[in-house]
Amino acid sequence: MSGKQFFIDRYAQLGWSYRETKPRQALRINLSVTNQKPLLERLKDNGVLLNKVPFLDSGYWVSRSRVSVGATAEYLLGLYSIQEAAAQIPATVFSELNGKRVLDACAAPGGKTVQLADLMKDTGVIAALDIDRRRLSALSNHLERCHVRNTMVYCHDARKARRLKMQFDRILLDVPCSGNFAADKEWFARRTLRDVERNAEIQREILSEAEMCLKEDGEIVYSTCSLEPEEDELNMDWAIKSLNLEIEEANCAGGNGLTEVFGRKLGISLAHCRRIWPGDTQGFFVCKLKKRRNSSD
Image 1 (cartoon, rainbow, N blue to C red):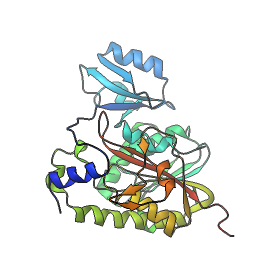
Image 2: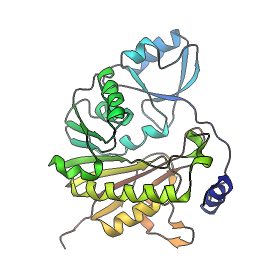
Image 3: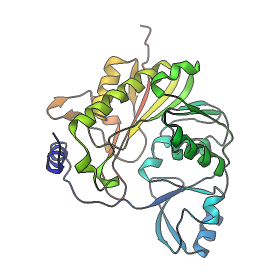
Image 4: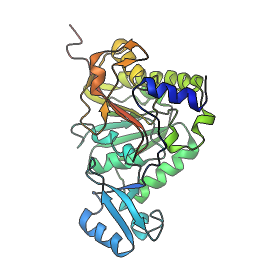
């Protein structure tokens, strides 16, 4: 089962009418390295005009630029990162991050890792994992450019995270996923439902392992840039039924998660997740999880 019309019909069943979209370019200011106002003025003087993204503290749309925003002196100095606006959301969903032990389980190419370090004010420690050695080079370069000092990088499979022999206060699972058409013009030609189901299975393996590495009072933020419910709400419904986890309100932009998928009723707590359909941003899904309360009862 594949093809553009197949997926468009699925989105209609989920309550969204397909339309062509082109996400706006965005960046995020690294506040542990610089201050927003002087950087905005400096970039404006160099012909880079930015507008605030209303649902982000340090995210900006690139409205106009005479130069590539990936080739400015300010970028090379690590004063900002080029990061899609919706992709900036997951790291902001955690509660307190200062001084915490954090696992970024699928970290490369490093945009969210740098953002986590920025939010942590370079305190605590981040263990950043990725299974692809080539992508780890991009991750390491990104960390170095942005002056991140609290991160350890491992070439390691997130499905075997317990081998690190560490327990974490916060775990970011921005898991490998099927992506969406807004970020890939050839998406409809590339994807099949079998791809989606295969990715969903891997995601559940990562979730299961992460739950075993989470401290009792810890938090997991699960996110994908997939629009497919198998990788989003259905995985979260599985997690709260199969793992010692429960869903908490994700205090961020986006519509409520789906509580019914293709006629199948899901737990009402799925509404606390956030589903973002493509528009100014690519599509995204975010859910916040914690260990189930009174789990010993």
